[in-house]
Length: 480
Image (cartoon, rainbow, N blue to C red; front, side, top):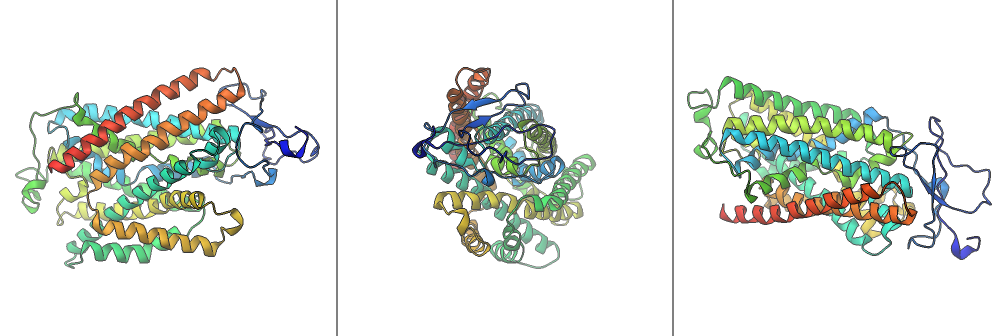
């Protein structure tokens, strides 16, 4: 491994408990070897050499100085991870329950699905962090290249970019609908398209010009607070009966949006799968997982696991609250954007629309960064050309594409169900499981083989649920 054609990859074993994240620069003549640690699984003083140099079809060498050094605290990571999760997906969940039931009892299996999916998606987010640690990768595509080779890496980058773009499309849909409703509340008639264009140019574009996730942490906290405020307002309206037939706002809304309950509960049929696919969409942020891991200060899988578990637990709690309360208020007529069910004359609903608009605005750039990073990967733009000017030009182009599509697409439920069942399945279940299997195989026999089997079983589960769910969502959409 000493000749120039066999130059290897390098990753020095970190010193746990130290504040230094730099490489050892005192012995540059030593053979270059890639190391991988598993501090969450093994004793921290055990390091395993990973002889990947000849096996990985990537660039021959990695500059040790190019290895990213994170600055974000765990608290900052939790704030941004939670905000990346608690976005538009939660507002379609009540409508998702209505796709398979109109019985109030449906909230129990629906809540169980939230908990199960939250745990599974959190695990795969941590697995991507492990892969970043094993391969010293800074992007999702780089993880693929260092474990699976160049073949398929462009497809991986495309799917990651499209998944983030689909989430931004859903956010644009929310902002345009909320903006139009808010204007109607104050007696101003503004079309959805006009609201979309105004909000995009004056608010979304400046936020999307930001280049790093960690600078958004203060806004993320406020955005999450806005979603929690919406959940509280929905709970109050459920408790005070304002939308019951004798309630104050019942006659303000269209008959198709008024509460409707029965005994239908098809939880044990394929009718539940579109709702599960919406959960796929609600819990996916894995296109940003590599960036989150590398922006974490003193990043290790153990520290990243703390941030991931806290974020997914908080998100699951919020999802259960909003999904169940929205459905218990409106039943089978729950809309795919639940705030559409609430009266324009309801002050709490108006406050919720304001809060959700702010929350969505603060989430938009978090997801857009993933879209832009994916586009940079696809275009294979080197770091030297990723200047502020070029990034800003790319931002304008990508945002214009999303906005044009958002003019014509308005069904939030179908966006979340189809997007969750297709792109999310690949990004969350398929790619990480395959990458982890390849990385562990290259290490030789190890104690991680059981985890490989576990990840592969979950991968098969995710593919099955996602595929059937997408088909079912399309069928329901055509019937409607």
